Length: 379
Image 1: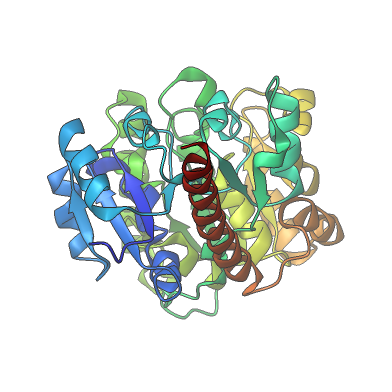
Image 2: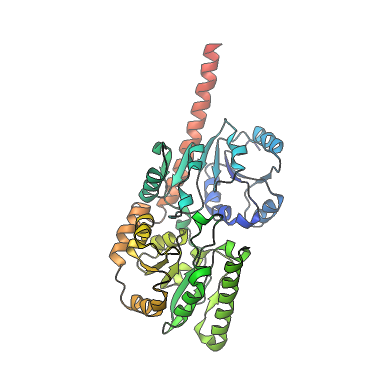
């Protein structure tokens, strides 16, 4: 166990495990440079992860078990993909440096919170994330921010969609969040109307790919909308089997995007992943709260997209058809991609991430050595 240099820590239950799963391939790459071990608190998560990765997985359900494990591992760096309350039990360990790596880049309010102050470093995608922390937090030391891009976007997963000659429009709504301030979903407000509009576009294939948490949502309105959309897709497929309409409830959305020609989505990491990977293709973003000025300010990507809300969804079919024929926002998306992801190209984010973790591991060794040296001198 002493060979583990980097811990990827995940404390939540299986319903949020997508937050860590999206990092697995990147962590496997990191493992070749700095041995990685995954530490989880829920045995069910451990079982799930063992089906997906060969990285060593350690389970520590209780706090005493966690401290005992950390003593045995003596790792250098701990990485956190979310802000679970149980992260604080891990942060107690003062022999490691702790870095928050998140599970996506988005304009959700939760992306810049005071939780960031608990970590030695906060890995962010680019300038937009830096500005988000400056504008959203008081007394935050921006020297903690490390711009690494988004390493997952360097991966090229196998396609989940069958080939088609039709124009493919992706509807990718987010979930309702765990609090009202973080609720950006369009499902329970205009979700079915969005799907109906997409199906009305000539020569179209609809792909419905909801956030993983949508499928387990306990919010009645979200459940109802999700089930209604599944029924709409099934009915459309029965009417027009050759169209290829489909619902994709499992798998990586990054394996869906390359085969799509336009996307309707909510405020989430999905929209920014599209901006990076499919800069040349139209994106439409929903505004649940119908506050155009605030939306433009808080969601910069909306400045290079068409915004869909209660007042405009009726014209969505015509708008989509127009954008598929005449994309008016391409140049604006190019500039906005730079704002969110600097000038990174494929492969650059992974390199930055590996370098950043390596520098933290070296810094930890240096700091620990200095502390021991200082103690020796004092004695």
